[in-house]
Length: 157
Image (cartoon, rainbow, N blue to C red; front, side, top):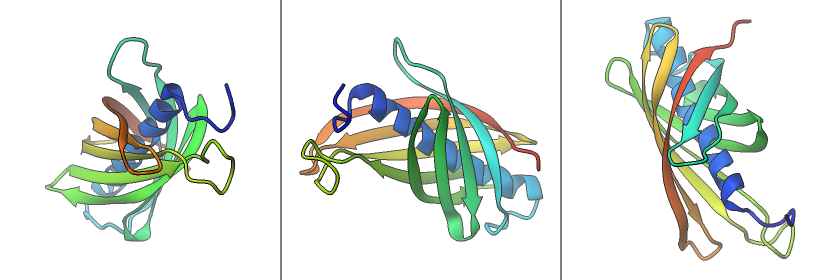
């Protein structure tokens, strides 16, 4: 595989990380009992895209002040995703994250971008939910769409 080409597997791997990010943020805030978006923390999430042949992926997600999400697939490893999250109801949340890849002409050239939208709930020290992703070509045209689900737990210090 050419290192500058974003194939379906890489798009799907990147989307899972985003989903995890949204979930992690909600879990931290809910666990504090305050609903305070300034509560931070890191989480390990297991996610899987819907459809035959999808691979279960493990991701670490960190929640920073101001609703910032940072997500990194660790097994199998993949690109970092960045985005934001917000509380929805007593134990719910939603978020959006993005990642991108260099274009076929190499770094610095437009390439594929992926947006992931996540919705979930927190119960105790567990989080679960669903996500959807859309991959766009450099012109903004949709290349593919998909969905998936996730569960996770906080990382202890």
